Each structure stands twice: as structure tokens, then as C-alpha cells.
Image (cartoon, rainbow, N blue to C red; front, side, top):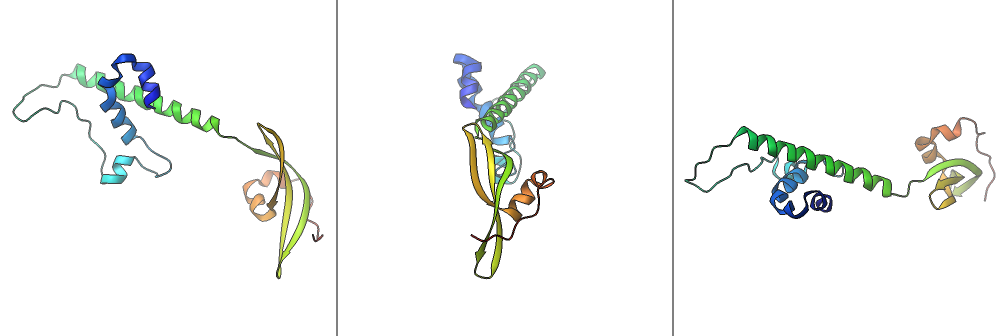
Length: 153
């Protein structure tokens, strides 16, 4: 995110560093299901607009507030774009079809497993998966397939 802001703001990125930090700390993070500042302190962070030394009196004009709000919106959009790009970098695998079925025995338990062909960026891959867990995740692959056989391996 900081890299994108440096590119967009050019040499003036240092002037906007507080806004970038504010936006980052107040944007929702999926991993913690909240904004970092809110998680840490229990309340939402306030923007340090015109914080001055004690004794200084400054008036906040509407133009400055509007400009600050625009920058915050712009930074939030950049954060969202960066997140979207991160999602696209992941190696996304999609199950194509079930190639084979087996039943494994673990003590007294019967565990049906299936061989799945995956379609990934690096080409087709094959893995053995537990049928019950795979059926929950990808029910569409089981609509046309027959039930598992009782062959043991």
C-alpha cells in the first residue's frame, strides 16, 4: 500500500504519510475481522486534523476538511486495489473431475477417498482427498458421479 501511495503522490508522499497510516489502521482486515486500531484500543481512531500545540489557535476550514476527506477516500481505494491484486497472485486451483475412488481402512473405520484432478496455472495436478470433506466443499462434482466402491487398498 505504501509503495502505491509513493508512486501516486511522487515526492510529496511524506506529507500524506499520516493519512496513509490512518487509512491503513482504520480499514477492515479480514484476518482479524476488524480494523487494527479498533481491535487494539476498542474504539475507532480519530483523524489528527489540525492538532496543534497547546495555546495555538487555528481554524479548520471546510476546504481543508474536504481535501483531507478526498485523500482518505483515495487511499482507501488504493488499499482495495492492492488487496485485489494480492488475491490474483495466489495459485488458484479448481477441481476438474474425480478420477478414481478407493476405500482405506483405519482400524475399524472405513474412509472413502477420491483421486481429484485439479486445474491450476502450472498444469493439471492429481491429489487424493477424503470424499466426505471434498463433497462438502465441492458438491457440484458429485451430481453426476456414482457412489464410491468398496474396494480396499
